[in-house]
Length: 395
Ligand code: NDP
Picture (cartoon, rainbow, N blue to C red):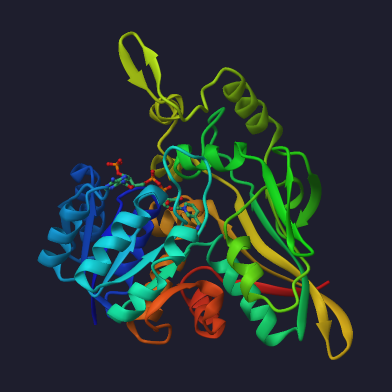
């Protein structure tokens, strides 16, 4: 039985709260804290009506370490789940370190002033977490998260050596809006408008944004244009997958999404630096976020499926082989279960599973770790029972 503190009442936070309530036998005390208390109140009401589970709520600014420490000391959680934004990773890790509480997140640290995300600052906490006897699990969403676990599972059960990995992320959902993002717009647009990057023969190779396109055939969806992006799980996988020679990440985008994005970029709406407007200072991408639909409200109107997985190629018993491990998730089904679309669902469910494995000691060792550093088997089993079943195909 565990006392869990979830920080961030957004699209993903809603799924985490619902799934923790559905696993009330493990999470017997649940608190949701965020900057906007009314969002916590909404999710508190949903969970109480649907599952008859009471959750506590609190208001907190997770950029403020002292406020976090005070909240953690009051709630006394066994674990803190950071489901806010990547900007809060370091402050929440710092507060966990000061209070001696385990930590989990779904996205790696990003500095608000530089559109660049990397693990360096979070990995730097490893020794201090170890000495304190607490653990941080980094990137327990779908990608990063489940994709890392798929790689570890392929390495453990299917290969002596993996030579290439392609991570394939397809969201074929349609929400009916001309333009909207399926998770936090600021984080999403910073990610997809950045330069592409992949790793080959020991070096990173940079591409122009959306320069490399491939058409992949996604089971249960079909052929879709997929663009090479930099994605954070590659940074840890190149350290932990034996014999790897190349790793790439592809995500699908429709023509309309790309045209909107290009246009917004051309007029400066994706800018992350302050500009003066009628005597006030605004950050264009933050203003754009205010205009765009809140991803937490897309669930009701989104139809279609997501398919996210990995294709691994390598050697087993002297023979070459290729396998494809993937999950397919239906937006309408996830809405029925958690009032959320599949992008939030595929992120929130793995966050709950990661927390569960830490709590029951299946995945517990002091220090700061990425997902592929643990035995993938219990996580894979949990995917099947918690709503994200996987398929494995030999290609
Ligand atoms: P949302 O924008 O919907 O939600 C973020 C929430 O965090 C909001 O409720 C916001 O509160 C809260 N928040 C932001 N800043 C603070 C702060 N300083 N203090 C307290 N609360 C704060 O984002 P999503 O739910 O879509 O995404 C959540 C996280 O999941 C992000 O880090 C995202 O990168 C990650 N993600 C990971 C994926 C994966 O597969 N690994 C996939 C998709 C997302 P308020 O509304 O009051 O500002």
